[in-house]
Amino acid sequence: MNSSPEFPAGLPFVKMHGLGNDFVVVDTAQSGVPVTPALARAVGDRHRGVGFDQLAEVLLSERADLKLLFWNSDGSRSGACGNATRCVAEREMTARGTDCLAIETERGLLTARRGAEGMVSVNMGQPQLDWRDIPLARDVDIMALPLPGRPAAVGMGNPHCITVVTDAEAVALDVIGPKLEHDPLFPERTNVEFIEHRKDGTLRMRVWERGAGVTLACGSGACAVAVAAHKLGLTGREVRIELDGGWLTIDWREDGVWMTGPTAEVFSGTLSPGLLAALS
Ligand SMILES: N[C@H](CCC[C@H](N)C(=O)O)C(=O)O
Image 1 (spheres, rainbow, N blue to C red):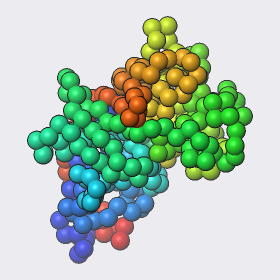
Image 2 (cartoon, rainbow, N blue to C red; image 1 turned 180 degrees about the vertical axis):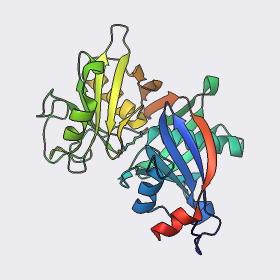
Image 3 (tube, helix red, strand yellow; image 1 turned 90 degrees about the vertical axis):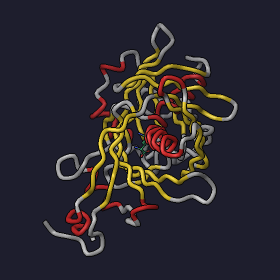
Image 4 (cartoon, rainbow, N blue to C red; image 1 turned 30 degrees about the vertical axis):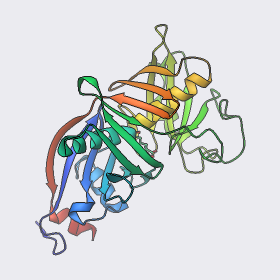
């Protein structure tokens, strides 16, 4: 095995997930090893690395308890990642012995709280409902985009394209997802969600994530979906959403869109110095 003169001890990481939306958490504040697109791609490789939907990079913050940056497995960045925010918050609240945490992200300061029955909630902030903020390439009706199925567009610090369908299971996500992800209407690409409004008032949601593909869940996507479903008159401000990996509760309150759900720590390990050396 090669050793890295720069990082002789390798890079410690923690593997976590929220409803099967899986993450590698690395603490740059402690390790001093900054994440690069190449590192994210290498660690994100499910055969030659660890594998993740997103990598959460923990940094020091002057304004909050900590700062988080999010990376997709294709090496691109995401301004928001709700499930990773909840996972890191759980770990940090446990380490610090608190029930509340302030987290700086690219989209602003987020508040996380420990909830009942081991759940963790995070306020993902107010949705972006202006076409320039989502962002879209031009001014169109954001609740009925000029695309097949008349999807809605909502930003949560990252873009989401939401189509209401009668049968979410029947959607060929891996065919339609990448088409919408790369549609020119979305200059920064987009996450893609399909939702079915069930008779019991809940939503069934399936997701194709920008930069990661089909995932078992997407927290910011669930927030965007709840906002779109409410604006389309399907649901109230609070809704339960079933994703492939489980359930999230979303509550669009006056102070922002709160998301509540489970978190899990899976294992911790050390990225080998050889892997890091190959990238430098
Ligand atoms: N899984 C994340 C969202 C990742 C979004 C990312 N794929 C992007 O490029 O915006 C979540 O729980 O919110």
